[in-house]
Length: 281
Image (tube, rainbow, N blue to C red; front, side, top):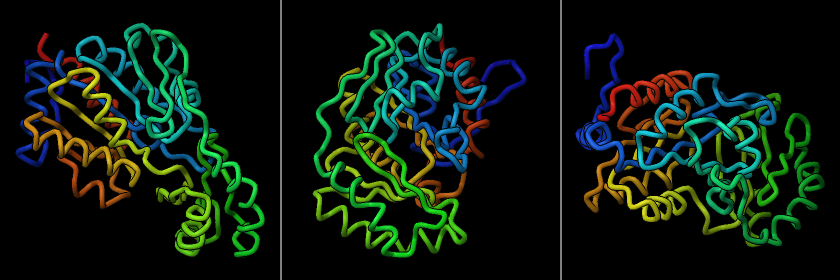
């Protein structure tokens, strides 16, 4: 991997090794797609305090000019991810794309604008009902509601027993969501109520097709990233090399399917920087 002192971690699967080799050999034909929270940014108790790891943006800026495209795919509104990521106006990231709300919104660095369809009416209805709904379940202590525009999320991380609160709310919230034509997306101590038919897998497949890329790397950390993993697996079955990276080990469902597990955002940033150094010119 060159004569420098760094080295890329080895994927633990043959498919992952093939994906990494293809990316390094022909980076200009590869899409690098990444989740935001827990992947580029550390998970923090208050999501409004989440920021990209200090090494993440420099690594992306070094890598982006070498590959076909870099995309951030997140459940957050696209504009929020851009702000918290510090992605706007960064030399090297002139062609970055942020697919927000699982692909329902899109921000292009080229134009600096967000494109989005009209929001689902069920989200407004659920938003209005939620405070009373949580109180009815005695779950207001320590749980809190995050307003996400096209979705609404209930966090249990600050509850006395976060896991118990999460489990207790899962079914009732699924019922509330279904009444308004929404689905529940579980995550790390968070239950998000959002419209169906939009997920990171759909967003990733559409984006890979749009770019015409041959190879795809996807990095994520949570259950919401599983559809993107499935999309990469589908692309691989169609002959496109792919690499699945998991940031952290908190979500076994993801870590067990990954080709490469890294300890978290700092290690992922290091990996991206190393990719930029190692990829063929």
